[in-house]
Every structure is written in C-alpha cells, then in structure tokens.
Length: 315
Image (cartoon, rainbow, N blue to C red; front, side, top):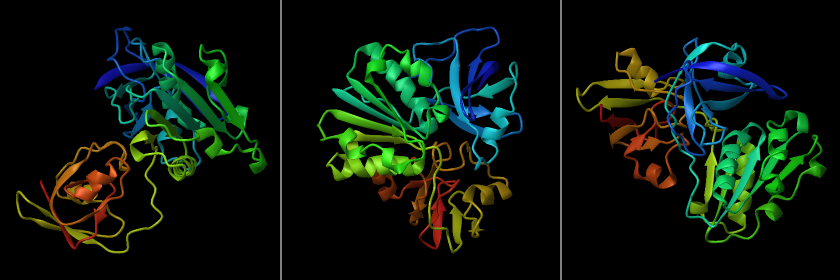
C-alpha cells in the first residue's frame, strides 16, 4: 500500500473530476505503464479501481478521473466528496490493459469516461513516435473529459472528437472508422459496456482477429440472474457450504471466517482468483480470457457461480 495525499481536484467535464495523488513529501511514486490502474481505498472502506491518465513517464503524481454516476454503488459519490489535502491509501499500479508494443499501428477508441486509460496510451505512443489514431465519442463536448488537453497535445492531429448531442443521425459509422484488419494493427477500446460491445462486434464483423482486440471494462454486467444455489467444498477441510441465490461465494466464505482477498468485487481485477479442483464454474467475470474460462480450473468467487451442483475449491 502507498499513502498519498489528494494534491489537487479539477473539474474536467460535466460530473467528471480529476484527482492528482502524490506522496506527502513528493517522493517518486512507482513507475507505471500505459493502461494501468490503481486501487483507491476510500475513507468509508470502499475500494475502487481507477485508470491512470497522466503521462507514464511521470513519477511525481498519479492522475485519475472519476465520473459521478447515477448508478454508483458508492465509489464515485465518495470520490466526488473528497477534499484537497485528504490522505488516502492506494495500491501500486497494475496493468490488465497493456499496449502491444510489437504492433505497427494502434487504433484507440474511447467512450465517455473511458478516455482515461486511452489518454495515457496516446501520451505514451506519441512519446515513442508510434503510429496511432484516437477516436473519442461523447454525448457532447461538455460531457467529454480532457478535451482541451487533447486539442493542445502534440498528437492533436491524430485525435478525432465525435459529439452526437443525443442525435443518432450524427453518430459516425464505426465500421468505417475501424477499417479493414491488418495483422499488425491493434485496437483498444474503453467506455460504457454497450459502446465497447458495439465497437468490438463491428471489428469482428470486419474480420479482425480476437488477439488484436483489447478492452477494459469498468463493471461486469450479465443479463441473466442465477436461479439456483449450489455447494462449495473446501479441499483442505472437506467442509461443504451452501451458496444460496443472491449471495456470493466470497460472502459465504467470509461468514465462516475464511477471507478471500477482494478488490473490485465485480470480476474485473482478478484479485480474488481461486483454483477450482472439481466442478464446472459459471464464469461471470471479465478478467479471465475465453480460453482460461474454458479450462475451468479457476474462477472469481466475488461474482462467478457454478453450473455443477458442487465446486471443490483449493482452499
């Protein structure tokens, strides 16, 4: 854990604040790479993940930006209630959304608050002289963060801003922007779930290979809700526990004093990843790849469940 102070807070767009976090003595922070995020431990006990959006060469601060969402589970409200000078604890940066440095070209696509990791990527790619294009989509300029920073950046000629003002007729043709796939071109997308699925589906329909498509999700969403409970068995003790509908495996384990490390509690960060020795998980995370999920030898107990009557866990 790293102790930091909120050095400054700025309004970046409607309902979006940016926060500069630094050590109290301004000592250097751990290095990070473009696409990385940190866990922020909030005063009320919540832990939330936020992408770093400053230049990855910077060591004196970490900058994050937070949209106050009407659907907030408490994190964004708590962040927007912070004051300059407040002390926080954060994790070291982790990167689940890295740039592919062997690519010959990079296509960056951001929707709304999804600009945060994409902006950091653009800063890095510009610094290294890489070939890239950035498309940023938002309802309006007032709801888009860092617009002036993008317009004043050394890579402004590679940035394309798309504001539809709520008019579907103004929305650009995603397929035309994505274009024909090339073996060494990689696409990165971040933003609301529907936006990302639209971009990724458009790319797949154009023939893009899955290995060339990269995304970062803010939350794991599933349309189907579990209708049945199941059992878990702890391999170390043989204890069998019931996991009812509406209760996560993490909560059941916590109830008997078994603590699994958790952070996002939405199947995004992988902190709680647990080995499965027997049974078939019902994967509801966005951390594991499709191949990793198909192996069925690990799952995220914060949100995933079971297709089989029992899971035997390596606990």
